[in-house]
Length: 403
Image (cartoon, rainbow, N blue to C red; front, side, top):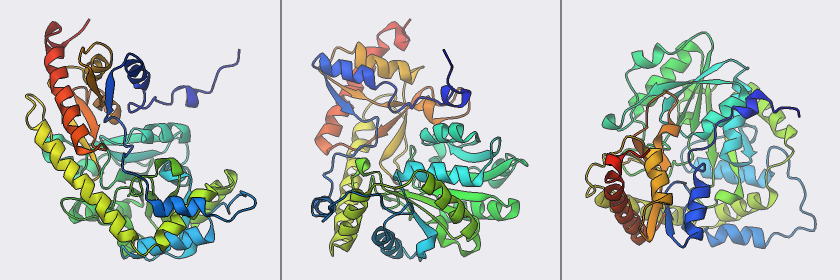
């Protein structure tokens, strides 16, 4: 029997989804599971977006242009203009979700064996994208005690080698909720210019800022040849299944290479692009987005209030996005999360994402977990009560370690 490639066989499983079969089995047994492991919002997708799909006057659901429908490109231009970012049509590419935008970015900036620096903990799918691109991720370790802000320049610069091609980061951060300050972004910009590196900024959560302000990598004019922005409508429109993302760059060579990648996969989703066009044409679209961000701000406060009352849980209030990294009073967070889904006797339980899978450095994150506060306030409170009860029960089992 032929074997799969080493590249595919060694692609890591997602810590966000890996334990899902245990959750499915718990539900089959009648247990209520609060899913705080995945960034799937429960807020209804705006009717204005869905109406654009329902009312599409199509006789044939055809391929869109590989770079995206012209009207979708225009809608994205208008959206970024609201943030003070001016882009020409040929500086934008519609992608199949933000995931494809990251994958394209790695493929057009790196050759096999090249290195990309990334602050850890980071979105674990970066690992999979890098493996499939045969790129090595080099971690820049950040710490919960410092709010996961970047370390001093010297600590980052010492990681740069002749094989380094780019720095990849999310801002606001997934899984940390960090919002980088202007000084941090200026430091990254200086490093990119001095070492001739690309800066790949994942800006999917730009609306979701509760402390500080979001500053796009495209707002630095000196980075016109170095900055690549990846984006998605998944979270801001609560439309994760739409699979509409974007890649933006002012470097014509990068965009030409990205368009050739897009040609190979033919077309991004046609109907969902029409949904985006309809949403952006609605006069209340900014108000709709503001209301959604206000809802997450309120959820953040509820989660912070509840977690602060659980003995042994250590965390920092996130500045943006809708994630929080928790320090748990256990030796092995993944074992604890398995316990919550398999052995915890409560009628309600909670599913978190084990923290170790968000790190590249061995041994880090074993006592951490990521929470996605994507549920309504009452469900967040009940989930936190289940977490507290689960910790108490788990710590009674062999002192919190199971054989």
